[in-house]
Structure formats: C-alpha cells, structure tokens
Amino acid sequence: MTASCPHPAASLSGLVARMRAAAHGMAQVELWVAACCAAAVLLAFGTVVANSARDAQSVRQEQALRHEAIWRCKALRVRALREACLCRSRRDMPADSAGIQALVEASAHPTAGAAACTEATSAPATGSPSAGEVMRPPSWPDP
Image 1 (tube, rainbow, N blue to C red):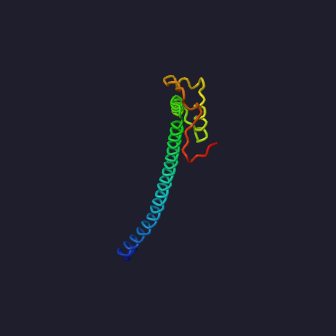
Image 2 (tube, helix red, strand yellow; image 1 turned 45 degrees about the vertical axis):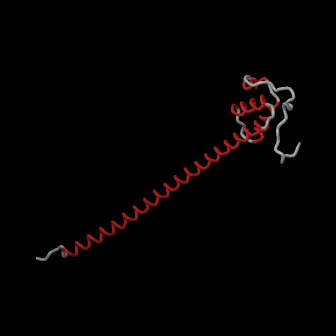
C-alpha cells in the first residue's frame, strides 16, 4: 500500500508558504488602505488650516477697518460730529478705507439720517472749528 498523500512535513511547509503569500498580499492591501487614509487625513487637515487662515485674515481686516474708522472719527474736531461719526461707524461699518472716508465726510455734514445717532450730543460751541474740519497729523500734506 502506497500512500497517496505526500509526506506530512511537505504539506505543512506548503501550507505555511501559501499562508505567507496570502499574508504578504493582505499586508500590501492594508498598506495601500493606510496610505489612502493618511492622504485623506492630510488633505482634510490642509483644508481646515486654509479655511482657518482665510477666516483669521478676514477678522484681522475687519478689526483694522474698525480701528481706522474710530481713529478717523476721533480726528474730527467738533464733539457732536465725532460722536455722530462713531455712532455711524458702529451702525454701518464700511468694507474698505474709501468707505470709511465717505462715512467720516458724511458725518462731517449732518443729515436727517444722522439724527438718531446725534440726539444725545450737544451742538458745537461758538468759536469751534468748522463742521467739516478734520485734524491731521503734521506729516499729512494739506489738500
């Protein structure tokens, strides 16, 4: 009687070889999945950082415009006009420096729309500078 099965050690070594090959193939698949997951995480992180930087820039720009509007309003010599300008700048914040200048100039020439902001302010005293006069630092040339 001859055995039709090969030697038990030979079948065991073949089984181990097949298991190693399968494990190697699975390891390559797992490596690709891990690489794709890492790429997705890096892409998401980059997107979050880019959005945060853009939001921070817009906040900085808004703060700079707010400070510029306050500075320009406080440069008006007449108290009533200063207060009207500050009130308008809080109510209607312009989007750029040209808008701030227009706001200051509009506040320097009171209109009926500014009455809500200026009700509690006093009228300019006699001998005060003209309504549209703005104090300028010495480095600014006169127009």
